[in-house]
Structure formats: structure tokens, C-alpha cells
Image (tube, rainbow, N blue to C red):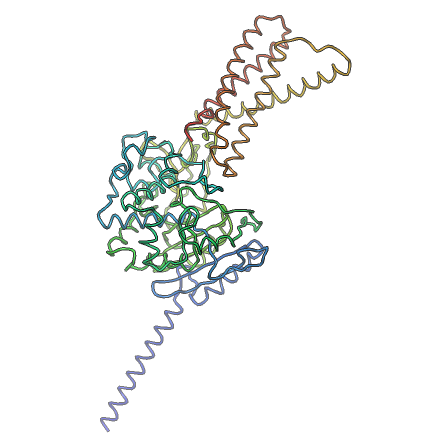
Length: 590
């Protein structure tokens, strides 16, 4: 009887154990994500979200995972809406700037091996004389490149190419358009594709192989990423190269972008193309504490340690190249955009949750930002930084050009406002007033500089309008004289003012041509002559101004005619000053 009772007690304990085990399994399956959404409800939530935005959706692929399981993987829409080709497991998308994470993982691998010091002057690892535009004695380090605070201005020319014959090796691409250094290293965050590509080139110099070969050997192959390509023309994986030809790209609103494939000359900064499976594989490896990409756990821990902060706060902004992306919880990762695709890789290392999303839509934010709130929760600035007082003053993005013929593109000002959808903090350090954002600061513009730039540009507009009206009036007078069969008035200053007006119109045409060429990714060598012509134009108009003043004083003209001629001189001087101030003659810088 006692033996039977013991058996019953044992079975009771075993039953209780099984019930506990079962309840643990159920609670794990129903574990809430950082957003509060239950894991088993996530697919329905995302399906519903996609349906809400179906009218503007082209194609989208998304995966959500934790440290042990894949919680969700789904494909939506089309890689080619016109042909009805759906997004499937073998569809490929461009990573865009998320490619940069491959650079930083590569750098940390070399750091782990003792081949690279993150605090060393990068010239230590570069060919002698490779950097020629440095303006400060403070050395540029790898950490500066990772934090995007090496001080480089933006590069607009030749980031994208259509003709394969236009592209060359990474070193040549970097040398061809080395940017000016406009900030002291470590003082201002200004997102830089060129700086990241320079880090990729350093990986080449240390490893003795091309950056593409290095990534294949040390990242793609160890992780089994067989459907990923990285080189400029994707020739490092012919399967991906062929699959990319199937992909059509669209605007955020869903309209087709014809012929949207471009070669990215600084390819470590944004060329990687792969399936969702490979993208997820890379992200899951980073989420794992025993990351297969590093020999030591400590290397991954250091990778995710903060290296820059939001101003003087203790809120991390950058972690060795991985940006802190604020949602309901703090995530780290990177977003990416190309001419026709967008992507995001996000990791919540505290809760062990990760997500990746890829779309074939340019500058897409519905899925790459809004949908992520279903996983990581809604962003609230107060969770990170208290206080909402907007700094006074005039600011411009640090990611801009202040030297060279694209300087006029720096006319982007923010006055008494910030984007509350992003995390920001006011900061005063290194003698600068800044509004600190992820991916780049806004730097205060002195009021005098703002008034000078706005005044010059408005006067230039006035000069063009004055010239256009005067030419129109002169044309009407010529037509009237012809109709009345009168001889045209013989006046050298009349011809001079006509020529001046035509030159003003020419300057406007040249400026418009530059803007069109930049926005259409036209190769630099096909429009560099425009800046040469700007230089010639400035010399001619300056000479004509002197001629006009001398002649105006030495001729018997009516007061009205003299006033008109002085206005013509004044507006020519305005155009010359604009050409000089905006560096439009500096054809040798870009």
C-alpha cells in the first residue's frame, strides 16, 4: 500500500512538472514584443497594416526574430507590378546604406586580430599622400569614420553611375572626389558615404584583398549567405546579378521609377544586394551573443558600446557605426536607401528581438519606420531626453558643402524649429551651437552669414528678373521700330546692356543645368565645363561692368538712361559676387 502511494505521489509530481513545463512553453509562445503586441498576433497585425497601405505598396519583405526563433517572415506585393511578378523568397533587394554595417563588422574583425587601432590616425593604414584635403592638425581616426565626425563635407558628384566603363577601383573612386574637410574631427556629426568608403578601403589595405573579397570570405561565407552580392556591378555573385534584373523600383506613392539600377562607385557605402533570408541571417548573427563573426564575445560587446552621444546627454547616438534608433525601446542598426530601394536592420539587444525589412520603393518610410512600431513600440522623446525647448537661432545641416562649386546647395536653413519625429538634443561644445540628430547635426549659422547668403541670392534673382524684363522691353522696341520702319538707335551702351542681360540669362541657364545634372546623377566629367564657363562668365561680366561705368560717365545720355545703365552694372556685379561667393568657378574641387 505504501509503495502504491509513493507511485501516485511520483506521478503527481511528474504531472505537475509537465504542466509547469507546458505553461512555460505557452508563455514563451505568447511572449509580448517590446511594443506590447503578442508574438503570435504579430503576423495578423502586419497583414492588417499592409492592407491599410496596399494602394501605395510596391513590394516588401519582412522578418522578425529573437535569439532562438524566427517569429515572422513574410513577403508582400510585387518585384514588378507591371508584369505581376510577386515578391518571393528568391527575390533580391538593395540594402542601400545598411551595407555600411558590413564595413564596421569588417573593421571590428581586424581590430579583434590586432591589425587595426580604432584611435590611430587613419593615414597610418593608407598609401602615403592619399589624403590631400585635410584642413586640421587633429588626426582622423577610425572611430571618427564610424561616428561620421571626421569633418568631411558632402560629395554629390559621381556617387551613382550608369555606364560600367565609368567605374574603377575603390581607391581611384575615393581619390577622384576627395571632399574638403570643413569641420575639425570629433566636433560635428555629418553623415558621410565617402568616409565609410574610406574605411572600406582601409580594410583593403590591411587585408590585402578587395573589400568585396574580404566580406565574402569573412562574413558571407561563414554565415552561409549564398545569395548576396556587394561589388559595384554585382559581378561577385552572378545569381544575384541576374535576379536584380527582375526588380523594378517605385516611388513611395507607388509610381514606377524607370531604369532605376545604378552602379554605386563608393560601393562599401551602399551596394549590397541580397534576399531577405541572407539579410536576416546577417542580422540574427549580430543579435546572437555568441556571434559567429567574431572570435570573442567581448568584440561584439564593444561593437555595440556607445561611441558618441546626443550632445551632453548620456543617451547613445552611435555605437561603432551602428546608429541608435529610438522607438518604444532603444534599438541599434541602420537604414538604407538607393535610387529605388529602402531597407532597415534593427536590433533590440536588451530584449533579444530583431527585425529586417526590405522594399523596392525609394525613400520609403511606411514599412521601414511606421511598421517597426508594431514590433518595438512608439517613439516618445520624453523616454530619452526631457525638455522640449527648441533652441533659438538659424541652423543648417552639417551634411552639406561649404567649399567648391556645389556650395550653393548649402542654402538649407532651419529657423526656430526641429523635427519632433526624431530624437534631438541641443548642444554647445567645441565653440559651436548645434542641434544633434541621428545621422547628423544641425550647426548654427551666424545671423550675418545668413543675411549675406540670402541677400546675395535674392539680389541674383532680382538681377535675372531685371535683365529678363529689360530684354523683353528692348525686343518690343525693336519690333515697334521695325513696324514703323524707323532706323534703330546707334548706341554702344544699348548693345552693351543687351549683352549684359543675355549673360545674366546664361548664368541662370548654367545654374539650372547644374541642378538637373546633380539630381539626375549625371557623370561629373560631362558637365564640369559648366563651372569653367562660370569662371569665364565672371571675368567677362566684371570687365563689362568697368566698361559700362567708364562709358556711362563719358557720354551724353538722359538721366533715365544713365540710371538704367548703373542698375545694369550693379546687377552684373551682383552676379559676379554670387559666382565668387558660391565657388561656382571652382571646377577643380569636385
